[in-house]
Image (cartoon, rainbow, N blue to C red; front, top):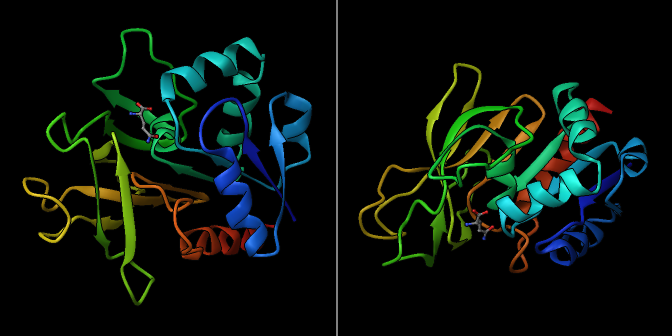
Length: 200
Ligand code: GLN
């Protein structure tokens, strides 16, 4: 199994390291030919507007859209979640996404006061909470019928955001508002690798 990590901007190396700790080889994706070699793809945290612009500049945006629409398993974290969303609130006027995930995300949802925070997040399918690192994170504001909500914030995370949706799955797409690639907990990546294996 080979997983690609979209390597245009963002915390690419952190994802590569978590995958390698799970014994999974990854390759940097910048061009459509790179995508041809991938059984699954990771969209990292970073800046969604920059990543989308670079994807257009590198001529890979259409290939990304096609592969994702065609059922390629994808894990998107933070900016990666925004890039997967079919609809974005508070994006820039010209913001493009790759789409595939039938959700509306609110970009920079937590606002300036608390634009970064950390806290426990209980994720469906995991026994113990993960330590969620949120950095100018989005939340999911609305989900389509086929989308499974995997995590909502509880009162332990941050004031004013109880009940906000921060992890979802739709078919082969897994997305988190936080950064599972930061810290030493590989369980979200392991969940994704298992999804890819099942599809493989
Ligand atoms: N706010 C960023 C964006 O709009 C996401 C931040 C992140 O990935 N940590 O893309």
